[in-house]
Length: 146
Figure 1 (cartoon, one colour):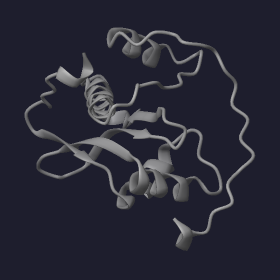
Figure 2 (spheres, rainbow, N blue to C red; figure 1 turned 30 degrees about the horizontal axis):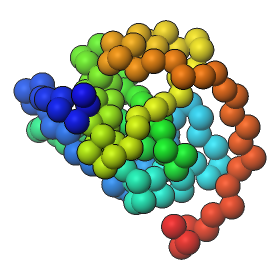
Figure 3 (spheres, rainbow, N blue to C red; figure 1 turned 45 degrees about the vertical axis):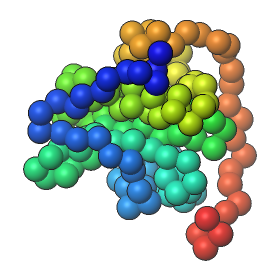
């Protein structure tokens, strides 16, 4: 289904792949940031992908999602002053379609208390596959290795 989704960003916006240049901005507002998370986001944009929705005039990044190293989508976020415009839905649909295009199944993690994201994924017909806990020990990565 997702492969055939028609995704039209609202007037005055456009979708684009994220680049390493967006890592700092994303990391600054990511609730799960850690010591090396900016490097992680840079690596994700280089080796996997991220999709953002931008303002056509100012080119401001307004919402985004990343395709993480474990295969799932994550860090779905809309800047506070751009919420309630449907931008999260648009970037999640675009990323889901991109995964379908490359032959991968889409999945993502949603925190149990994140009711907004739960409603969004239900609207897009995602379904609960399982519950899990994350244990993250950190990264050993040098900038020149990514």
